[in-house]
Amino acid sequence: MNYGSLALPLLALALAPLLPGIINRTKAIIAGRDGQPLLQLYYDLAKLARKQAVYSRTTGWVFRAGPVVGLVSAVAVLALLPLGGARAPVGFSGDFIALAYLFGLMRFFTVIAALDTGSAFEGMGASREVQFSALAEPVLFMALAAIWLAGRSSVPAVGGGSLSLSTIYSGLSVSTWMHSGPALLMIAGALWVVFLAENSRIPFDDPNTHLELTMIHEVMVLDHSGPDFAMILYGASLKMWSLGALLAGLLVPVRTGNFFLDAGACVLGLFVLAVFTGIVESVMARLRLRRVPQLLVSAGFLSTFALALILWR
Image (cartoon, rainbow, N blue to C red; front, side, top):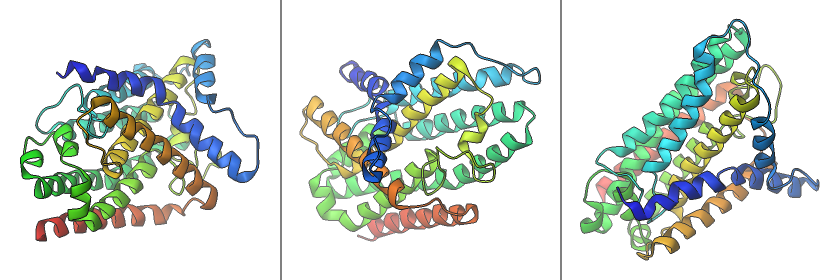
């Protein structure tokens, strides 16, 4: 374990709820509204934590375990997550697979908790969630593989180590972009699609909608309340931070060797990413549900073509 990098999970735990606030403030400014406060999610979490959870008589231990396992999985991801050139506290060969399947565990318990209610409405959202995530996960794997190959091809001594996230992202630099810029742009586009899909943002889902036929993620958590719902919201913000860090670490190739400077540059990139997300949600409408798989498959082709382009070079 790299004890000096223990600050990275603590930073994420403290700042992750700020990302939805930046997105909402950006959307409010573009729309000419006052909008929510920047720290609204912090207020909501504190309010929900003081409430008492209400449970349906039809639910069992699975329903109560869903938010807990989801939050623990999201926190565990932070231990494997580098911030740009700043290495993660825990790293081992193949840890990117563990990261993907921690997200899968988080999703699985959210889905079965929704099914445990016995509601066909929540089952509909669970079905959509599983379908879209099954298409997004291969895109993530292909994109990370392409990033590793790009770093290894530009700086073999740096990018040729173990297949861990810290090694993969330490191989990125300005010279990597000069060597494989077009391929990295395609990878960034694919990761951007995964970021929006996995976080249920427009054009895949609208976190503010309550229309029955269009809800995906929100419909699965309708029966949760109090501290359980607070854990779900907090876990979702940590997931947004984690996926955003993968994209920001690619787009902000600051690798000075200074731990705080490298991590700070990636955090700044995360905030810019949140602003850009707010802009996208202000100028776009959500897609029809039958168009969502097509966009995810297109992202898969994009990452695969980027991988082939790097191998060809």
